[in-house]
Image (cartoon, one colour):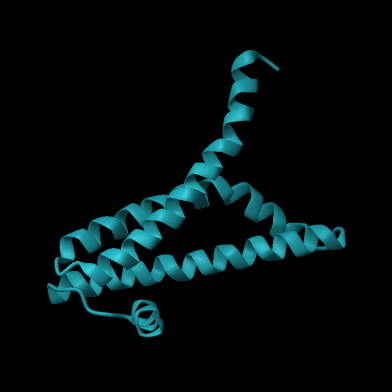
Length: 125
C-alpha cells in the first residue's frame, strides 16, 4: 500500500465522523431556525445544508448499506449492528423527507408553516 493510499484509508473514518457531526448540527440548526426565525430564507438555507450532508452520508454508506442488506444472515452481533445502522438510515431518510417537504411547502406558501415533525417537536418542548 502506497503512502497516498494509507493516508486515504486513515482519512475515511474522520471524514465519516465529520459528516455525522454535520448531520446532527445541521438538523439541530434547522429546528432552531424554524423555532426562532421569522424568515423563511434562514430555514431554507439550513435545510439545504442538511440535505447536502444527507446526500454525502448516503454516498459514503452506499457500499455498506448494500452489503448489510445482502449479509443479514451472519453472526448475531453483526445482524444487530446492521439493523441499528439500517434503522438509523430509515430515521435519517424520514427526517430528510420531512425537511424536503417542509421546504417545498414553505416555498409555495411563502412563509414557514409547521409540518408533522416540526410541530411535534415544538409541542413537546
